[in-house]
Image (cartoon, rainbow, N blue to C red; front, side, top):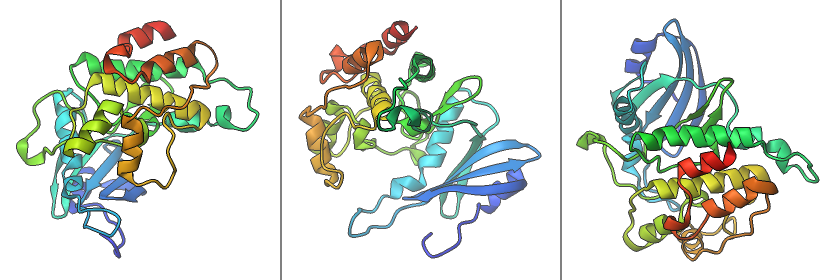
Length: 278
């Protein structure tokens, strides 16, 4: 994909016949487009394999991620979406979710000297979105602030390509190799270090949600390590539990502290988190 101007696959153009299209993201094997058409308003995800570089090993699985997410959306009963293959990988389109993400919404809380506290109703919306997924027997596997879209009527949890909980076609499936280390639970980081893979759990989702609330409210990661540290060094710090103190005022701070417990069994369930917030 490098060196060429990105374009939507022909199959997607034929299906949606866009009236407007805007490239939102193009990095590391994934493109996201905002597309409007007479059919509706959509997010279009297009995957392609990452070739090996000096910094990154080859990552062929990125080509499969959009179709894998499409299969997950099908299992969850979502309407008005589609997925398939193109000559460079796979694609899906799904309803566009309007609104800021969690990190964007809580930016005023992070400004130096700010007296603005993160609003618990926003946190509760995120909890409810994750609770809905957990109630259907699924684990997200990639919970992070950018994946909570705070809409005018409800909060949407997006990016389900790494979710586990039901059957996914073998041709689109791939092992879980961890997620963004900032939000990785210690047991996930440890497993990835030891074996190169891990099994996402709902307990790990709880940790990731706590880390997401913390960084969105304060700008600080849950675990301390140098910004430019190699990925294995970051994971080792997470696995060893070198956590920063949670500096969020009030009950939300106490709740985040519990969600970031080192042992999975010490973390509250998503239902307990929701009850505490409401």
